[in-house]
Length: 277
Picture 1 (cartoon, rainbow, N blue to C red):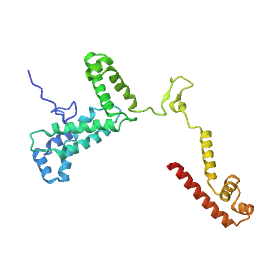
Picture 2: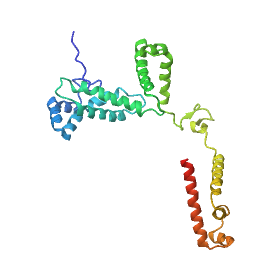
Picture 3: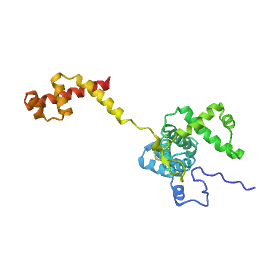
């Protein structure tokens, strides 16, 4: 029986020795050998590092595609995986008898999984439950394939070695990964009353907000000396000009301007102190 050659993890799925792309052939010709790694370890030359990165880009694409269809664009996962590749190149010791792809894969996959855990969730979720959610999704795929049907919660919990309640909670957390858009359509296409989610979301009561602002303003005005409070009330509630206020109070317009400026500064300080309290 003919033995099948193991697939190279640095090549995309479906590619074989007879179907190498031009990019794959160029990578194969690039001298990304232990000698090149040894040179980078010795010199830390950025140009050598760049050659090593380009030579192993296919490995990042291959691993990123394994996380496709999980709510994040593959292009973004590739960018995250490239961070793992760079870290692996910087840490790789060519004197150890280990293939670079074998060494780099856990680092690249770790960066991608960390991206899902820390940045992909729309709502803050404990890391233990995030990891359990990812593990549950993997087991659901495996069990569906093995059983040729959708697995039960008990079967998933058995694979994860957790209680059914924990498994169910982990699976339900998937709905928190990406919140629905306010523009999401609701109802059937033929429904005349069809709307969007934003139509059913509560809004701030503007009248209540104005009431709170007026109450706060009254308290702020009470903190002013009587003459300054009178000027503010005449200017901004009575809509009088500085000249009209000056005539009514029998003082100069310049004096009104100075008192108004001082009163506004007092009001700002009062509001700031209230906010800091």
